[in-house]
Image 1 (cartoon, rainbow, N blue to C red):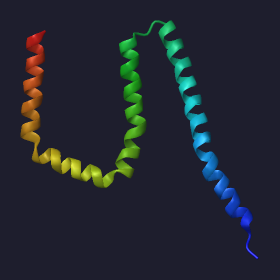
Image 2 (image 1 turned 180 degrees about the horizontal axis):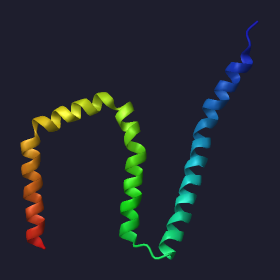
Image 3 (image 1 turned 135 degrees about the horizontal axis):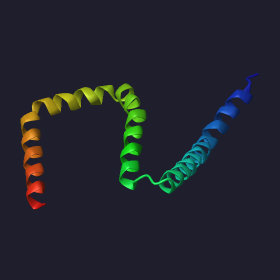
Image 4 (image 1 turned 30 degrees about the vertical axis):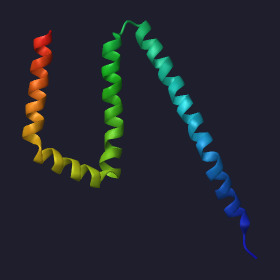
Length: 102
């Protein structure tokens, strides 16, 4: 006779997993809100805080992107390498245009 206990618990885990991850995300948002409130009350500039937050998020997420999206990364590098001249021209054009507007 089969042991269905293991299969049942795996099925329950699959059913409960979205709720557990949603609770963890809400907990993370609550912690982030507390950190933001504390930092802004201490006098940190909102622009500075946004820059730090994005830099930290990039440092945390970038290794996962390099590991799990390696094939997409290789294709993107090839695409950017092939179109580097166009990309540089457009960047220079828009940068000059926005500086001119100022």
